[in-house]
Length: 406
Image (tube, rainbow, N blue to C red; front, side, top):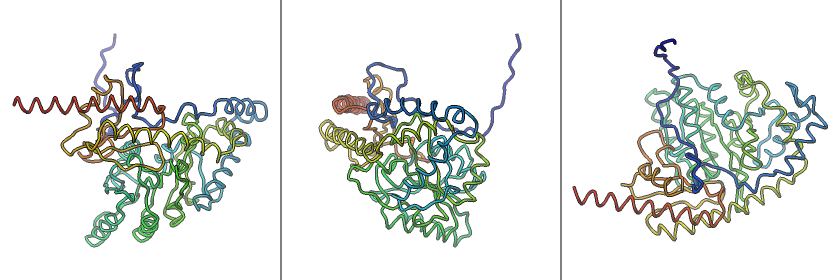
């Protein structure tokens, strides 16, 4: 038997807490309100089965080869046409299909930054993106959001001060403009225009992560930031929220030279050409507008159920912005509350959530919590919020008793 010596792993691993699985422990009684899963009944299983069969019958040998059959080209064309709804005009060479939008974030970051470069984000923001940025060894700086999205005025103020004092400027700014994850807010059109102008003026790129754009309960859509600054914006979206996350298909749209460099870094070559073939067949079978309307009907009802239950069981104890689309609801508790302190107790009670601290760079956001309203049915959501409220008040009462004893 060999005696194992200590081994030094790569220094690129960030010293951040890993956010666990929504189904950690696999308790039968657990109601997951944590991770952003779609409604199971919304997944087009029957049509996907037919699309898979068609892929084998019509393009089998080609679809199973490295370069694929007709699927990849057709997917690019679909993305190009669908993007026009966001006022995005792009050529085939300005589009790259990726293994989900998370891969696109990674490729863009490694294409446009070097270790130590400034990368600016919203606060709060998607913790998966923060992990990618930390692995890329960028220097992160954050700006708050309000009911109209990113505080672009504060971004502009920081840019001006840095330029005057000859301090480093950002190479990238990461923004989720529609139904922001986790805040649920939308970036106003005025702020979109101004942010694009600033990108040109101070020569940085914007990553526009638009995963939730189709999930608009009132069917209102604002032009993409990309439409105001196509030479300084890389636009991302995904099939995960409108068809199925298991496809792992997303895309990026940007300058031809940016997309070419992303392709060089994309060591897996073409993104699953077989899955693209199946997805192409599915897109030919379904009416996408009908599919999205169905999703929005389901998700609006579940969002309303969550809002109603929160008001019933929490009353004035919490506040939140009520989103008009997307997947998430962002709760704000009294300032002295740390939602990470009762995550385990909530799991024991049978409900999961994500504590607010995971969505921030610094030691902040402790009195927040993100809840997903899309996965569970209305009656289950009602029960989950009841359990969560009971857990919360037990935590508060326990802390008060401890303080009284001390």
